Length: 123
Image (cartoon, rainbow, N blue to C red; front, top):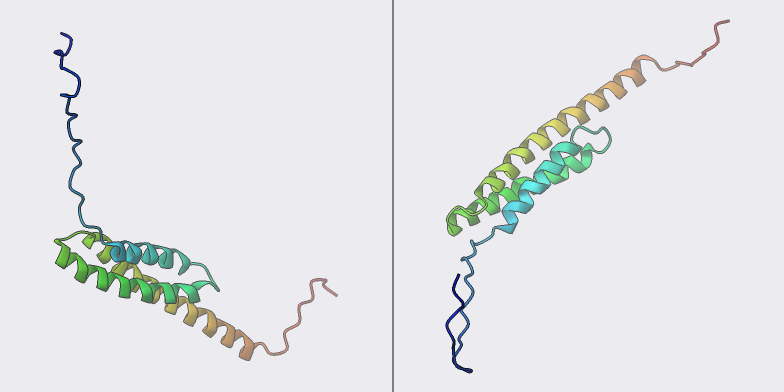
């Protein structure tokens, strides 16, 4: 490789760095997707699924706002917005089903077995 040509002092102009154009971000869509996934995971944990209902509703709201914003930005973050909507709906549905099942089971056992005593030793 030949050496660079000689340039007199003061005549060197550095090349401008190339930066690719950044795509517009959609943070609300990403927030909807993340909150929806966390809500979906929490919906399977008993006694914590109350939080999953709240997170699911927030994911649906953030996903809807993010989806509208994605249409304005040309599709940036639309996948995460749809993820937030879908996982939010599933998290709310699963949580409501689990909450109803747990409370119906507790009600059933509390009314049908009122004087139950646990006696581990047979006598």
